[in-house]
Length: 131
Length: 154
Image 1 (cartoon, rainbow over the protein chains, first blue to last red):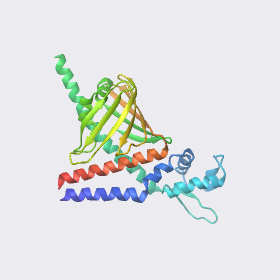
Image 2: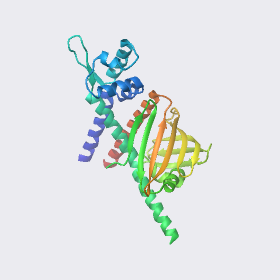
Image 3: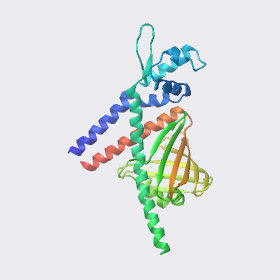
Image 4: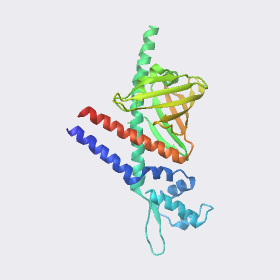
C-alpha cells in the first residue's frame, strides 16, 4: 500500500505544479524574444522598469505590458521601494518550469532506454551472422 | 545520470538530444523499420503499438497507433519530407486526440560520436502557443503513466 500512497502523492504533486504555476501561461510567456531578454537580464539581478526598458527600443508602457505577462505567468515578482517597483525573477515559477521539463525528460528517457536494449540486441544478431 | 537533454529554443522549437552506444546506421534503422520501432516507441509502461505503418521514403506516410489494452489509445500520422540514410530524417507529424493537433515539423540527425551516435531532434511548432499546448499534453501523458503504474500495484 505504500507504493499506492507514493503514486498518489506524485499525482497530487503534479496536479499542484500544473495548477499553481499555470505552466501553459509560463511557456506562452516565453514565446517572445523581448520577454526572454527581460528574463535573462533579471537572472543577473533585480532591475527597475527604466533599467529594463533601456536596452530595447521600446516605450515604457510597452515594456510594462511585457512585464505584466511575465508577472501573470508567475515568472517575475515586483517589490515596492518608494516610487520604484523593481522586478526580480520568481524563483518558484522558474523552478516549476525546470521541474516540468525534467518530468518530460523522464518520460522520453523511458523510450530511449528501451531503444538501447533494441540496439544491443541488433548488435548481437549482427555478430551472430558474421560468425 | 540521464543521457537525454530536452530544452526549448526560440519561440517555437523544442530540442531533444540523446547519445547511443550503437553506430548511426543501427539507430537510423531502429527509427525507420516498423518491426524495430514497435519494440521501443511505446511511452508509459503497459502501452503497446499494435499498428505501425511506415513508408520510409520522401513523400511516404506513416501511422502509429498505441493502446493500453484497457480501451485507451491514440494515434499519430505523418509524412516523410526527406531521408538521408543513415544521418538525417525530416518528417511532419500530428497527434489525433482524436482531433488532430497542429503539425509538428521534426528534423532528426544521427551524428557519429566516437563508436556511438549523437541524436539531435529539432521540433518546430507553428507558434509559441502550440508549443505550450504540446508541452502541456506531455504533462497529461506523464500523469497517465503514473496512473497506469498505480493500477498495476493495486
